[in-house]
Image (cartoon, helix red, strand yellow):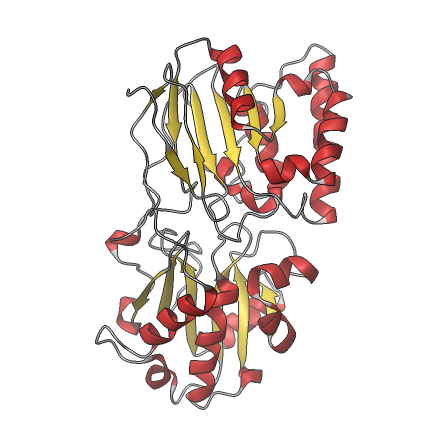
Length: 374
């Protein structure tokens, strides 16, 4: 490789890293657009234009006429996207079509993330949506499932990299708003005739692949401000090296996230320490969870990778980051496998101690959230 290679990561509004010259940087999964991020108002204008049929498709307000009940399917914690930006224009288009707001429900799918309550729900879906509309998780035999079954128009609002069937085999939608997220927004509208399929350019990017070090991110912009939100980056990491490391870069400027996740995190760390302290092996003890769960994802990463590094300058300076480091100091076995670092130089020093002078590095600048479209 060249003497130095600067890589822009989708962390917050953009974070650059410069791997050491001795590291072999494998081809990037995707590059990050270096342009300035769009403001939320600019992104909403893109969405309104697309909903109006700017690409020649039927406007949403025309499609929605003569329908009585609408279910808007939005991703849960496992499928982050700028829902707080996208949902209000969709809602306004439906109201303009004559559908009463009381007959429009937002359903978090596939429904296996953390509960959609309180600050977490407002952060993901926006204060306007949470305050004025019904919001339910899709849980079997729950109100979300009943509202989905009742709806005669189903609209999916999803990340554009979520795949052909973003919510799984059990969901069908009539219309989709596919959001390309990161530093800029690209909006794609998929009309009613498309069924549950998304266009080919919206498929998942290739996985991180085999390397000594897998370096991924929380995804950028406002959707990885807690460790809980950033962990999908590790959920999709699959090492093929016995001594591999994983680095997760994220902002984390709002701490650990929900109280439920925090309690699960500390319980998990103590249980892992007990296993290691007794001379047991934590290696491959936890399979990758079939559905995203923050605590189980961290357990999987600790079990699968030889070491896991959280790289977050903001989180490292946050009171909860200080608490995490203090607790890790009380867990000597686990602290050899898990670290929280706030400086880039500290990350490279730790990796060089673990892998020697020459090692391979796979960087996925956007985490699992997909690729940019020209």
